[in-house]
Image (cartoon, rainbow, N blue to C red; front, side, top):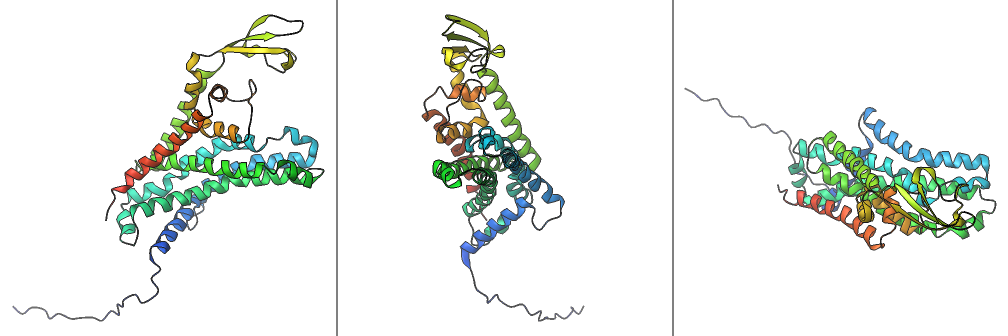
Length: 340
């Protein structure tokens, strides 16, 4: 039987002769791809709804405050939250953004098993991980700073003497920048670490949000002040045991200047300050209060924050390091064994 004759076709394949931009260009391309993925750039309109909606949710409080300032004028500045308060207001929105959007960067690549395709280029698993983290960190940092910029611009423009306002408040600028980096790091690391252990984005988002709600509820429930002993001066004199729900220091019931001391009981007892450290929302809020030198008055902050304020500053700092350092190590450990 005669075999078919073989034929060779010249398809015009040629070696690449253009510039070889090397490892840094591959890293930059991966970073750009990460930014586009999170923001939904290059995809359909439905992919952009969530990031745009969350961005607007972060910006709306600042815009509303600026509108109030525009109508009320400088006199309304006392009712507008400062830089420290604004970070506390948007922290919930930021963690929701992190929980939902961070898995977009890691889960699809692991589910579709495309990581080996990245590593055939001059990239390592560390390069991949760092580029993904920096892409998400950059987006979160923009979100964190955007509202502060709008709010500070409104405060400056509505001040009667803008130069004097800047002179009196310029110290807030480095504090805003410093806290922005800390908050963006915390928001980025945790959700990415969770996303590294599943291929389903919904599971990662649900776990982060559930852990956030559960730990916050437990912490606040065990640190809330149930009853207080108030030592007053003036006509009242002596001790008064008053239920927390029926008194407010600084109100017409008990003027703040008449309060000599205040001792309250909590479900967690003497362990309440340490239980308060479990509050995930307070991880950055406690550092925020330290950086902006905020002294919490009774009833001003969350129960866990009030409890943690009784501890030395080293405790909230250590908790922040643990809540960012441990997830970062888990994330690195998860990807360091990936090879081509």
